[in-house]
Image 1 (cartoon, rainbow, N blue to C red):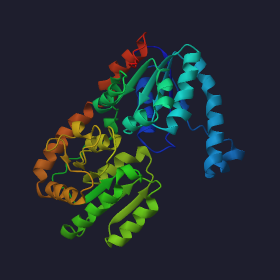
Image 2: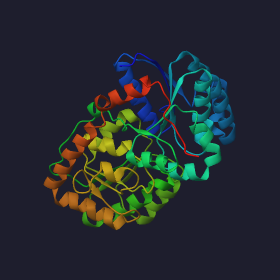
Image 3: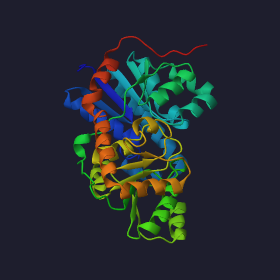
Length: 361
C-alpha cells in the first residue's frame, strides 16, 4: 500500500461509539495489508494504583490528559499522524495536542473528523477551533454532508466513507420478519431513544409479542428506564453496553433496526444493520438520507415522530417481500463501505506530499 509508518490517535474500544470502532477497523485493514501501524489511545490505561480515579469526574480528566500527553512521544517515530476527532472540548483535549506534536516533529498530519455536530462546533467555537484545524495537512470526513459543512466554513475536506467489516456479519434474509426490534444507539439526547420507545409502545398494540433490544448506555439511561416503565409495555430489553465483537450476534437475533436520531453523520450502527440484512427504519439526519434511500435501502421517517416510525415498521412486517428487497440492496450499500472499497483512498491520503487544508480569510 504505502509502506509508511502510521500512528492512529483515537478512542479505544473502552469508549463506546463509532470512532473507536472505525479506528480499530482501519488499523486491522492496514495491518492485513502489511502496514506498520501504531495505535495511540486518547484514553490510556491508568496505573493500577490510580484506577479508582476513573470514578471521579474531574480528576479522571486531569490524569487522563497527563498520561495521554506523555504518550504522544510515540508520534516521533512515525511518518503519518492520523488523528480521529469529534467536537467541542474533546477536540481541544485530544486531536489538537496530537496534531501539534505531529507538526512539531515534521510528520504528515491527517485530521479524521466524524462528528455530526461539526456545523455548530465550527460556528460557535471558531476562535478555539480554527488554529487547530490549520495544523492538519489534510481533513478527511466520512460523508458528503460533512464535506459541505467544512466547505461552508472555508475548509477543503476529502470524503472517505466509514468502514464496516461485512465479513463479520452474516446476511440473514428475513423472508418472514418477526417484530423483534433493535436499537444500538447510546442513551444521549441527540439519539432520541425515547422516541424509539414510544414507537415500540404503539407497535405493541398491533404485535403483542414484540420485543425491543436497546444496546447502549449513557446519561439518559435512568430516564429511559422510567419511561419504559411508564409506558406499561413488556418486551423492552436494556442490553447495556455491547462489545463490538458481539454486535453481529445481536443483529442476527433481531429482525428490524430502528433509529430516531436528530443529529448524526454516517452511523456505523446503520451500516452494520445493512451488513446483517436488517431492514432499517430511520430519520434522515446528517448523511443518513444519502446512505438510506427511502424505499430502496430502508424507510425514512420524520424526526420526533414515533407514530411515523411505528407505521414504517408495520409496513416492513406487512410486506416482507419488499422489505427483503430493500435489505438486499442495503447489503450492497454496505459492501461499498468495506475495507477493499476504501483502501486505495487511504493510501492516497497517506502518501500525499502537500497540504490541502485551506481557509478563506
